[in-house]
Image 1 (cartoon, rainbow over the protein chains, first blue to last red):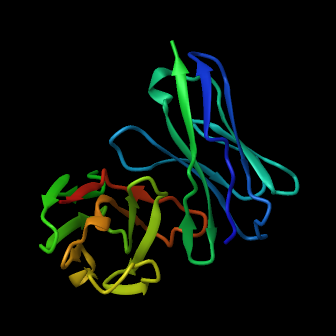
Image 2 (cartoon, rainbow over the protein chains, first blue to last red; image 1 turned 90 degrees about the vertical axis):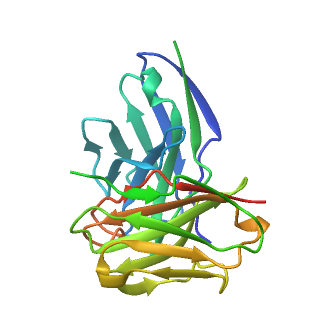
Length: 108
Length: 116
């Protein structure tokens, strides 16, 4: 099965930028790269998605490598509320496959 | 606008009993998905409805699980009979267009199922 790989955990200080990496070396040309996050006791929450170009929205930025085999989610100023598990997921065939994600801790 | 609603939020049942989980998608969303996370494992796809039709049920673990979406609105997921390994959190999500292209899906808060 094609999968994404992410670090198990990362730590950041509050109000500092955070770069969350993801490798997806088996991505196909039409696969969108999606990022979701899961706060404690919540369902996954949409963060951002993109195909080839870098993307920005009010929550984050998504930087996609030129070969599309990796991407980075950028939180410009981490807050305590950003502490969550972040999932980089791709649509392999019909359905999205969640990996274990990266658990982000934000230190005050 | 109401989000995806799931209930109950938590269910504790004995092995062998039946449990029915319900999901109310966002109004107007034709696509509805069920996912689950069992203990210590990753979130896994169960099935996908388009309106009332099952588009893909390849993730359903066995025939003890039955999903329905009568009328293309809310959906139910029944587990009968429940086994210990069914314990976990069951998530429902919905999207206007198929969640495989340039669109996002919205998840409910999940139902935590505990089978004892």
